Length: 332
Image 1: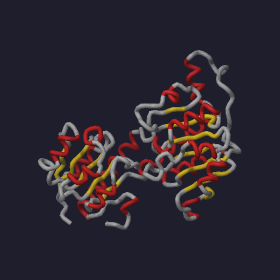
Image 2: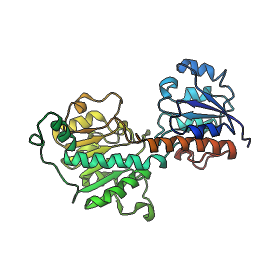
Image 3: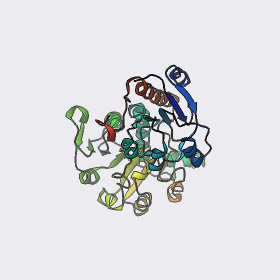
């Protein structure tokens, strides 16, 4: 395959600037100048009518909108690759790009460590009520108004989604004295990947977990997988932690569970309609909230950017992306 092409950057490169510049050795690098989706759709028939690859970012979607069927059909026939900066790629309707012969990649392993670190912070913080303690401290109340909470020791940790991030959470959590670590995937993993986690059904995961950690991708099958019915099956006083995508949880059901006491507290880095947060979560000082900071570190952001660039380079030089999304495995 020719090592020349044209790469359209939708968003910006902040850290891996040298890597981006070096990609210019094998491709013409073009930055998005379209101001909105309508203009972008028009430009795909004009100044972007010969692009080979798209570097996609969450920030760029504020201009282009989702990479959906309409956009896929508007892309030129020269487009062969869409490389997305993020482990989650729900902004891209993969099916429509697959139908057009366009490979899609993401950055799965690049985010594992940083997201798992955030996940552990939320588990410990939610269990121990550290968030409320920090708020009360700033009010001058010291610890007198913060209720005693719970240790992880002896509790059951349930991980919904034992992929790269889930396994990193498992490994980090193993030193905190949980009595056992359970997990559920659509299919059971090999013993080598399972490690010290035990496979159970979805219902058993809900039934047994003292702490339920959500580490699964968002798609049509997982949207609102944690809903009222699922929460009703959980232990009374369960702690729920989410660093995946906000919409894997029905946020109103989460609020209702907190009100009833079915859920003791939550630790959330992601929200269903972010940056808008349900006011009853925002105003509840007993829950621990972060503004989607799972990968908010220089090292991880640079690694993610570099991973996207290496995927594009691989596509241009070999015809294959490295981190092709699971839906496309074996199709290219």
